[in-house]
Length: 333
Length: 119
Image 1 (tube, rainbow over the protein chains, first blue to last red):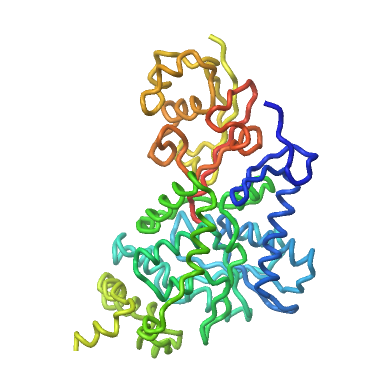
Image 2 (image 1 turned 30 degrees about the vertical axis):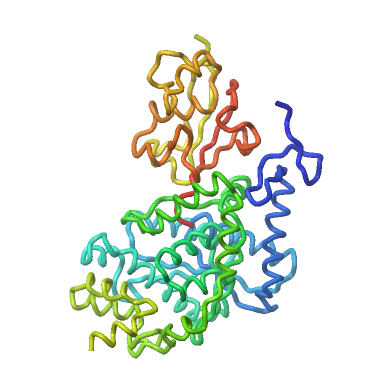
């Protein structure tokens, strides 16, 4: 078979079939379109102003490693004028997070960005290892997810940044759209496709990789020989997300545009006014002051359960939280 | 019997299924033998594949039967690699090279990368 030429430059041998467009492209054109599309996403959403202090949520995995690299490239190429930082959360999982944090420490050197690591231990007094000791392996992902979200905000406040970037890619977002539909979580369905979210008291968060396919992120990391870490968490993975992911990958295999199509579907949903009205108003947690839709925020109610030695119960209560939570409370009374 | 020498690499977490080896060198029979267990393609296509030259489909099955140490369902599904595993043939996306049908040549470098691990 004769080598196929790049359909963009018509000069060099193609090395990649783009999942988004089906185009065959060469390495240099791939770098160019990959980086330029992210730049366009940033410009269209008007994500930054010169002088912004921006933290990249860095786990050492492929997405955040590529994000740190590309943000550095774009910041220099287009003079965004950003002050870029790396922010990592140490969940306290021996043999998993301690190894991935070594990758982040190397990224700090490679990309010349200041790094802040914040641990669950120092924030909450509990490491994930200890939480799993107490609650077992069934609900631990709930703890980890809730704690990480707050931890990033607190870490960002700690280093005085205005904006957090995360490496969520198009596949992640499509997966979340599917999960929110399957759970009937209308509030999250409305939010999960937004490129930027910001609560009243929280720091702005954005996903510059919103339209970037995972395949291209992995290929970019491979061709650029970026240093990333890829081991599964040693605790049981989020099974529900796992099913959504497998389903999505099967869809993608038969029609690659499925991922972007699902994101567009998620964006196109419009939540009826009477449904919106039912959603609970945001207030602040009376224990820690973090935004919350109940008296205690999710992290504090999980912590309370842990301290009382009944972590599992807090999760069961937390699970009930949906649109009809107010109604259920009425019935309880 | 003649063989093809290959370099095979695993990354993105896939190496964990292969005894934590990131790179292996191997010699594969240049023709797919018709009577070996290793070559039975999923769905009982063994007859159709008799005597054909070794291709990537055969390599995937050979790896599964000879080198894979655990959880084969994370590597193979429906007779090919599981969706979400990227394959490069001599640093080119296998989608440009005919995927499973690509006929292996001496010195080929085949890379398998899982995209299924956290980012």
